[in-house]
Length: 121
Image (cartoon, rainbow, N blue to C red; front, side, top):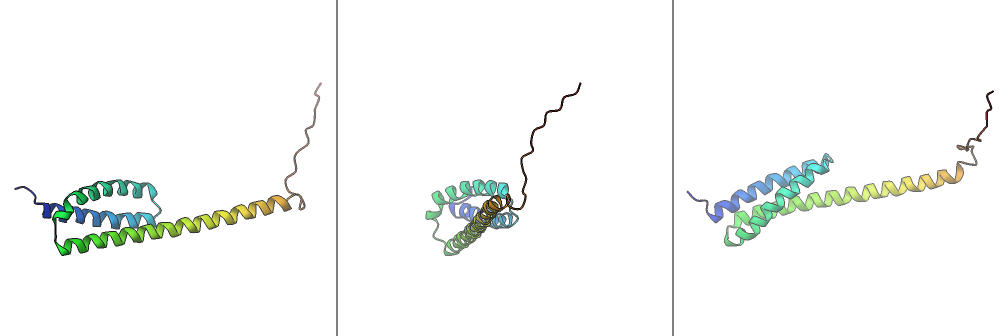
């Protein structure tokens, strides 16, 4: 028995729901390599759904697709927030490093060693 377009779309959306949940969980674990792999797998499903989805007028399927989009949006928002937090922390560290570089000589920071010549004879 051959799979109908509707059955195919239901299967694709189910797989996308699983991948979206897996993506969000791995983002929170900061496993970015796995997230990238998941996104590549999801892209193929989305492409297939874009081709076959318009033929399906099932409102429950459209609702499930909206849920997948909402989870993906949540993941993107979480990631954008984390990127901004990391950027702010990096700027703070750079500011502190510049400040330390200016005051270190005053407090006896690391001074270059003078080279000495030793003659053994």
